[in-house]
Length: 157
Image 1 (cartoon, rainbow, N blue to C red):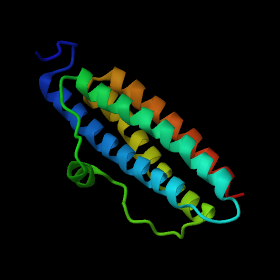
Image 2 (image 1 turned 135 degrees about the horizontal axis):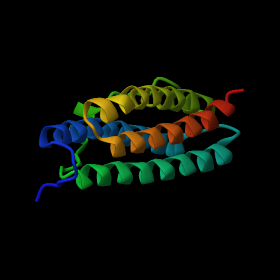
Image 3 (image 1 turned 180 degrees about the vertical axis):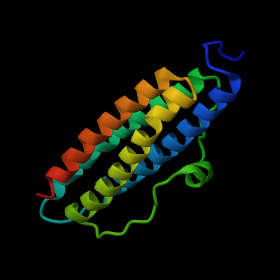
């Protein structure tokens, strides 16, 4: 049964597709953060290992929330690696070395890219697709990523 929540069927499909892209970005960022947790090396190993763990746990919660938002709008969330790789804006390739600074630099770039993408879609959801709920939700996601980026950036000072 499709939701009757004051948003046209066509707009619901567009919102769901845009959220699918966001979910794919979140999944790639989660995977890269897991990689950092597993593979970081160096004298600051322990502290960075724990830091990356806290970040991937937060990203896990974010992914679940985005998928549930998609489902609440009457659509299915993508759930295969193939689909995630087709939808994402984030490269799965690591460009830095396996030390804390390298991983932090890479992850910070990805967070900032995602923040820009989220910011660009806030008004699209609200004004073009008439979905203030998703607009508000994405604003919250953006703020969460801004804080996560700040935490990463603070390690580089």
